[in-house]
Image (cartoon, rainbow, N blue to C red; front, top):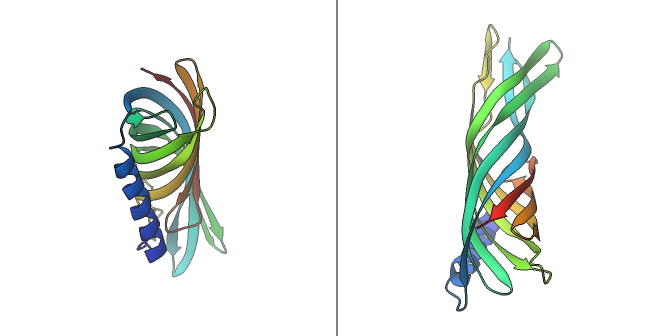
Length: 194
């Protein structure tokens, strides 16, 4: 994973400061929930055969089941969440004489986040920011007489999320930029508040 730029590091610190300060505010109520998300994201690696290198893109899709715990006031919510993910990915690369394809590669791992959001309606629809850390595991097949540079198993992201409640149930979305490259993650899910 690439080294964080000073601007990114400062933004993360400011967000974490806001998160921890906000958790000590008066009048907060503790809340927990369970959810399941459908996630999609891409990663990049490379394959080298006979001194010819070609990048490949891994497109992953997974289900992530977990929950969150947090504190909320009348106007905002601060929380931590986490989920276990399992799914599949596909790989494709083609450049000159290098062709590398795989399908249905199992992917599993963990995703954890800290976040804070503001309620934007009387029903407590919510928009906010999260900092997710995702650790994934995938096993790639190495072609004969080739070397692989696999994608990083650790992904740090910055996310925008939205949540819309319906009684005790809720619908949520998340759009994340992966730090260190141009790839993104998108998730769509539903859950239940206790």
